[in-house]
Amino acid sequence: MKIGSVEIQGLTALAPMAGVADRAFRTLCRGFGASYVVGEMVSSKGFCYGDRKSEALLRVSGEERPMAVQLFGDSPLLMAQCARGAMRFSPDVIDINMGCPAPKITGGGAGSALMRSPRLAGEIVAAVASAVPVPVTVKLRAGWDEESVNAVELARIAEENGAAAVCVHGRTRTQMYSGECNLKIIRDVVEAVSIPVIGNGDVADAASATRMLHETGCQMVMIGRGAQGAPWVFGQIEASLRGEEPPQPPSWEERCDILCRHVSMMVADKGEHSALLEARKHAAWYFKGLRGAAALRRQAGELTSEADLRLLCERALEVAARQEL
Image (tube, rainbow, N blue to C red; front, side, top):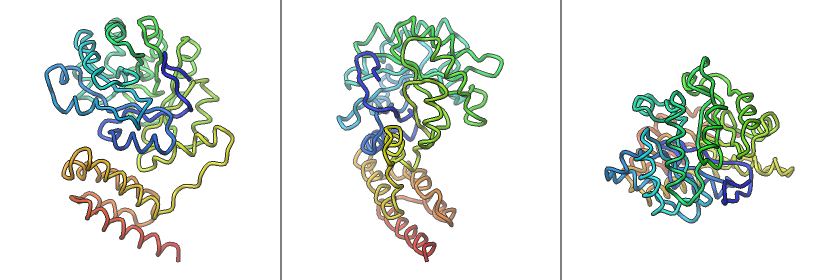
């Protein structure tokens, strides 16, 4: 698959999850087989007004490539200015968020709220595409609600205004993350545009990835919640899609090692205090599927240091060992 001039070897992408898809997690997922990763969304307004956190979110490391940075906002001028500024960090692709359903984003007219303003959406795509030398992509939802499913219209507008690819999450904004992903709307978009389409929603394993690819005709699948606590899912899906025997899920000991490596990367990037606050949810996700994990998740919510994490992993392995007896 190619997004403009950027060639991607494989069929799986990591979704741009706020508070999750940071540099550490992106690097880990790439190492486990993700073909492409998209970073956490960055406020164009915040970046243009000098917010240091926004700059930190735009940094790209060599291990992540090919990689896209994602921007959000409702001003063509500020989005173009932010995109130009983001080029200092040499992203491979600029992605425009028109899919986030969070009220704090849509309340400001950005994210999936742009699907209710097709003309403005097109102006934003055109402004960003003309501002940068790299491909520009757009992430959409099926529509705002069931009465306004307009992903096809928005995808066409994106293509007409210079987008090199679109990603479609097959849910409306009002659905948030509930209900089933609408594969038909993704297929409708595939049939309506000539640029690549990435399918998103409910992909968590090889079976769901295969279903989405076959039923929609999309060129790639994007994985979000299915990768939380399971970065190895990318390698399993890629192997299966190649017709190979997928690797077995890691043992609990291996999962704990991966978790500790993940958090160590976060600490190196953000410092121990900030990293451990964010690591609490990751630790809870890694223990999913372990009987008796409720107590471990509660303890994960109290992590303050890497030493705490190592002790928690020791407890988790004790729980796993008792279950094997």
